[in-house]
Image (cartoon, rainbow, N blue to C red; front, side, top):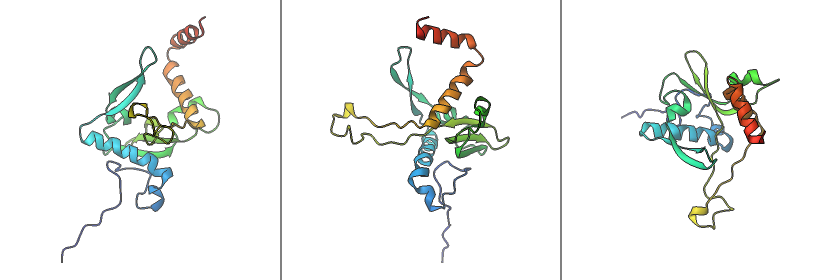
Length: 179
């Protein structure tokens, strides 16, 4: 008789994580919604594909671009040194808040030193949604929910990027306000 190997339930690429995929609740809405996209990005990387990244151009128009999963996570997604910390604090931003920093959907960390690499909000949604499903394909859209915690991280990210060049902030604010 041949014994079959017993595999622990998992998602592609998420080798080191604070989620236990052998637990039923890990596959539910509140956890799967962030685990699956993280795994999908690792899968894309494994196939040599990049993620589609939406950004604003100089005219504030949305432009698609490509972003490797390694750029997104801060390390190669298959690295033995990458830890996926779901629903965790992105601790480098602690310096910008009074009190407790909220949790973000995914923090990627280095295992060897515990340093946070990226703090990511993940939005898993369907296209089209119920308000655009009867329209032509070109007019499909989906709902994006922005939680208050997301706003905290947005503000911290802005502070982090401009704090070393206060002149750039003055320029943006003064030009934006027409001063």
